[in-house]
Image (cartoon, rainbow, N blue to C red; front, side, top):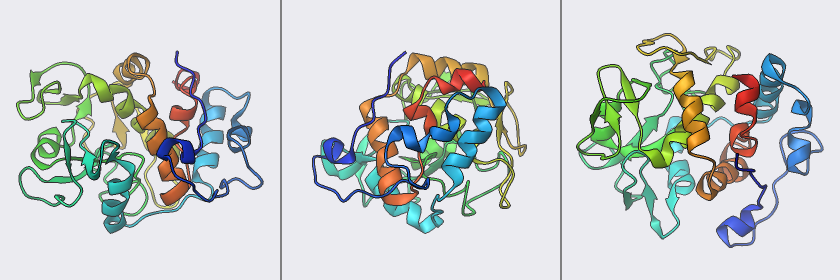
Length: 257
């Protein structure tokens, strides 16, 4: 399994930045940030991580998400563009909206699963919101994640059937880690639903997302990469001031699920 190294944002972006304090009191390193989780497993680890990534986190409005995605998903080879999640297409940051071939805000944890819509909190959490082609987003809809189906014509490498969506290989692990983050971050407090992963599809409006067995496979098959690390750091430094622990500590997936 790949070992994720903590990298300062200044190295990842090649610019000098002013350090922003960690949300946990007195935390100054990665080890400090996750101190309350060390040595824990199972439900105890899940509870500790919820406390860590919830405390001090900033909640965005749905409008603010547009601007955040232009930074978090910026194309490193063309800073005027973002990279779309399912197609991998690099597209102008300004071509966002609702028209065909524009990009919009995809809720990777489908917003109907828990019926939270675009409400601040789970509906605006940039850790699972990604820019996607408008019509591809519509075709994915609110389907759970699983293997198989027919290849998506507008997004080769993605597959879908009546009740599930399989993303392209390059982002399978990214998708899994976003889902695991949501299942830890939202535990039924502050008006948000208690989100949980299960091994089902067709979860409807229940606050569940599947299939966890497949998501775990994707997590192993597509390890954390530098782009994912950069995105996690940008969200922490500039927007929500919290982290996806499964990017920093991939081994914790097996400890909880």
